Structures are given as C-alpha cells and as structure tokens.
Length: 348
Image 1 (tube, rainbow, N blue to C red):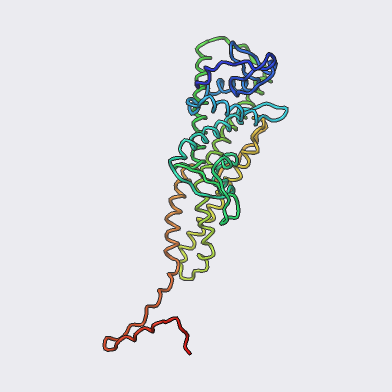
Image 2 (image 1 turned 180 degrees about the horizontal axis):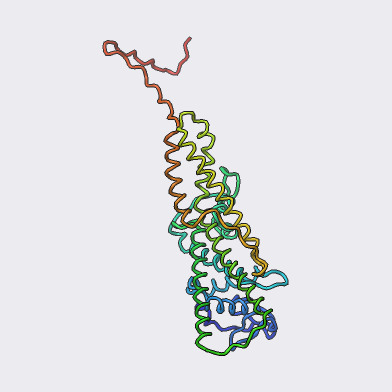
C-alpha cells in the first residue's frame, strides 16, 4: 500500500472535510469518516474496487508520492460520467495512463525527443492529454504547434502494453487468492435460483469479453507504434518504385505485398483502438466486442524485421544518379591556359 495511506484527514470547516485520497473538500454528508480518515463517496468506492480486484494499489503505484496518488483520484473524478458511476474498465485505463506518464516523466531528462505535431504523436499511440503536457513550441516548418516527447527505447504503446499486461496479471492473482480463501472457509453454499445462475453466467461472459478486448487493444497499440513509421516510408516511395523501369519485378511484388499487408493490419489496429475508446464509460455488459486482429503478437516483430530487409533491397534497386562530369583534362604536351584575372573593372 502506498505511503499516502498513513495520511490523516484534517477538517476544513465544521461543515466540510478534506478527502484523504483526492485531497478535495466535500460536505460531510458526501462521504463517511472512518476513524481519522474521511474518503469522499467516489474515492471510497474506487479504493474499495481496487482492493477487491487487485488486492490494493497496483505494484507500479506502490512508490507513488501522496501528491501523485491524489492526482490519480482527482483524475477519476474527472472521468465520472454525469449521473453514473465509474466502472473498473475506466479505472484501469486511468491507472495505465498515470503510471505510463510517471515513467516517461522520470526518464525524460535522460533522453531527447523529436519536435512533431500532436497529430503525428497520436498516430504513434500517445494520448492527447499526455501530448499536451509535454514541451511545445511553434514550428514554421510544420506551420503548427509541435511537441517534444522524451522517450527511452520503449514507445508509449509498448509501455502502455506492459502496464496493461501487468494489471491483468495482478487481477488474475487477486482472483485466484480470493477463490482459495473461499475454498479454505469450506462453508456450505445455499442453492442458487436458475435466474441468478443465468445472470451470473452473463456477467462472467461479459468480464471475459472485457479481458479479450484489453488484449486486442494492447496488441493493436503495439502494432501502431511499431508500424506507423514503416508504412509512411512505404507510401512515400510508392511513386518512385512504380516508375522505376529497371527495378526487378520480384522486388516490386515484394514491396507491394508488404505495403498491402501493413495497410490492412494498420486499418484493423486503428479500428480496434477506436472501438476500445468508444467502450470507455460503458457498463461491462454493454461493451461491444472488438473484432479479431488479422495478425498475432509475434507478427509485430517479424513484419518489422522483414520490412527493414525489403525496404533496403528496394532502395538498392533505385536507379543511380548520373555521375557529375569532370573538368576537361589538358594534354601533357600542352600548357594550361592561365586563368583570366578579374579586376572588378568593366572593359571600356
């Protein structure tokens, strides 16, 4: 549990209390005092949901400062839909974003990043909120505001995928632990009506689909991060490839197959990411199932490596530029003409 748990609520006024999780002030009736700690209603529910699904804060948040913990819970407040509550899917999305942002912030002083428009960073898997928090300036080259994201060898998509997989693992471990504790109690269970069984079955199926959606989204984000630049290179050289008459037919065919595969996979990946975003804020049972991607996890690395080899061969097959003409050489038995001296004066 993070060190923020040791904080004690300080009363604001006789009518208001400060939540020990989000550090915002509320009327006393908007929460419940537990000993010396006052959590507001939303933070209390979110904290309880994390304990139920993960056993507490995720591993990556164990060393968060109290300010970072408060920022996390304040973000949950901003994501709460009007007239509704927060679901577990939205909470996990906020966790992933805050954890990934913190890891990027910790490493940004060690490396340098490119200055690019926000739209370019978004195609590489970065969220709009994260992009807008980075260093930015006006670029005459792009005629737009550009942003610099300092990153390590991992892209945002790779970091996000790693954190998502970690949360899924912790969630599975917590579920197994709860199941084992229930078995150890060895308490006789009362018979469950058929309607309740059907409802539980539907809920279990919806949660299973939610986990599948998360896996598909993580793979799609990883693919977009790896292939965006490669596809841009393919499309940029398309005219040159098809206008080069001397290029071997086999090389052209390999290039066309690579470009078509990348376009197909990237379209499917972006659709999956968009569908995942549209599911946010919905109850689990109302979430739409994401379509299966036309590639597997291992294909991301394989296609990336193949692309490097294919594009290298394509560039080799481009026609070479004609060499520059050398100055005419003077025969050995003839003296070179002296260069005319420029005096800066015009002839009379």
